[in-house]
Image 1 (cartoon, rainbow, N blue to C red):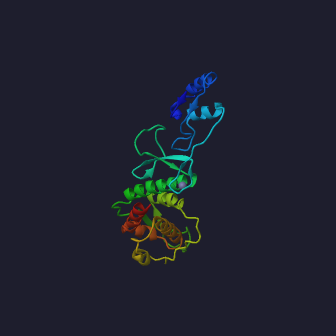
Image 2 (cartoon, protein in one colour):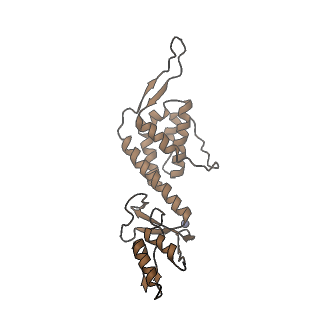
Image 3 (cartoon, protein in one colour):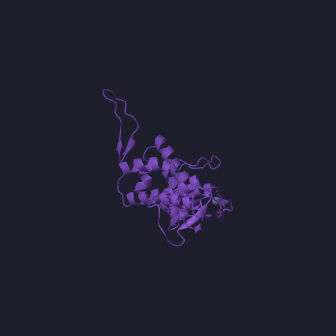
Amino acid sequence: MILDECHFATPKQIETLRDIAESVPVYAFGLKTNFKSLLFDGSKRLLELADSVEELKSKCACGNPATLNGRFTKGFMQLEGEEIVLGNNLYKGLCYSCFKKEIFRSQVYGKVCKYLDAFKDRKSVGVWSTDTARDSMVVERPFVIYDKDVQEFISDFDEFKTKDSKDILIVEDNVKFLEKIKISDKDSQYMLMLITCVFKMEKNKPGMLKTLIESGIMTKWLNQIKKTI
Ligand SMILES: [Zn+2]
């Protein structure tokens, strides 16, 4: 007996199949894991009960054996959704490192779209403030109290910081310089680094982020990421 697509079977059906294997040989074929890299219930039960398991690996586009399956929509891997969705060319076999890269791409793309939306036509994203100490003439340097969108933007994009110390950007901490950076030939990695550089600069030169968002420069940067990710 041959069973194909055994990942669609329920654990109970696999148990029945195992009983059948007492009298006739049974060969079951199917995927081990779903698009989230988790075992299908049926495949899990099959691995538990099978007398022997042989992995047939296809090839990832990079040449390594594909061990995982990614589900793609419009060029981006889906991170959420129903376990079973059928369709042509939806799935791609991937090795672990390409699977991780695709997760990163999808997360960046999702966040870029979110903030392109949030920063669209925004006149103000924060207010200047001075932290005047009570009963004292000392006036601290003015700083910007940013709204919720910008605070979330900083924490979301800080996550995408590159760990590659070779790629250090040479950028000056003034808006005039940042505005003039030619971005059309820059990749998403560069743009992500540029944004996290600005977060660092904001600590010493408050208001840079405010100017970049309100002038629309940040939107151009985000669009460049969207184009190149
Ligand atoms: Zn690969």
